[in-house]
Image 1 (cartoon, one colour):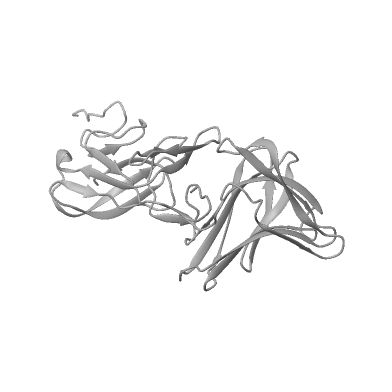
Image 2 (image 1 turned 180 degrees about the horizontal axis):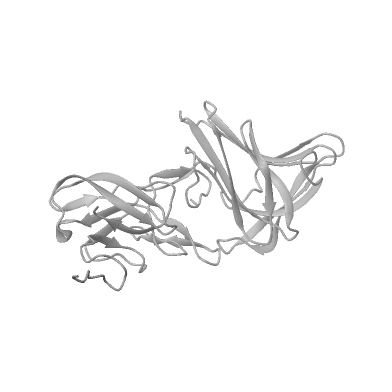
Length: 284
């Protein structure tokens, strides 16, 4: 019986593709992005990556995302949001800057809710939005007193109360778009949990998408992160020109097959969506 050669990395010698697990672009890969972008480190820090530099996830793998905008101004702070309450004994939320550092290294906002027998609410409405099918509101929260915190709400859609603890965690809610505007809320409802809560908040984001992308920092107005553009030299892998499909192997073990055009040996790769880190891209 003849032996079958297997490389020490476990792949067949005929494997054709590009590996991104080393935290750098492999030979034959080039990358462009017209703006800075953010990636989260393994210790929860928000790291800004320069223009035209690829991003690598904390657990390994290349991050590829499409064009997206954060429609919420002042993304790092909720101090300018509207405050109200409803029901017996409820009070407006109180927002202060505290000593706790946000993922970007600056002081986070502390929000203290007292819902009494009703609701205590923090909200921001963005008007003048274009037509889209769905919006997604996300924000990072943590608390010194682990337990049930406020729920995220977007327009008429209210998510489950956030289970907050001492780690920064991102919470997300998606909802059908309302023509021309979107209202994002943090709502503490005494009927759904505790009457009081104290949380830290950072990184509010509103996108015209069903899913949240990585944080996009904003100042006085909305901001856009450009599309990631990965070009691979398939000629060096013996792949002929034409319409081709390639296998995207994700760090989490998932697989997707996406199509693109190889021309002159080169192909700008399709974006898989969802921000899942890519371990390698291979020719089937």
